[in-house]
Image (tube, rainbow, N blue to C red; front, side, top):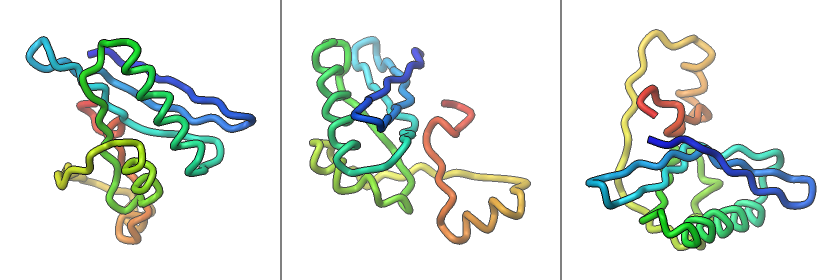
Length: 123
């Protein structure tokens, strides 16, 4: 599996995608967005960064599709993802945690704790 990242820069703002290519059956090449980090969130910046990433994937002719699993309690991506042509699936990824620090446990109960795919050990 190939790990990489790409950064989209607009004015003074940056948005970085953590990426992994997953090859299935030696034919299907999935580009997985493991995380998105940004200096200052704006829906417009996210929309333009997705558009740029999709364009790069199409130009490379190496990517079959792009996937992104994000926490259900993180609504900032919903509208932009729909408007970028992604299809929303009703699948879920379950996380099992043990020996959680009290401050993280509190964040989990308040639904402010965000776990992305690159936070998983198998990433």
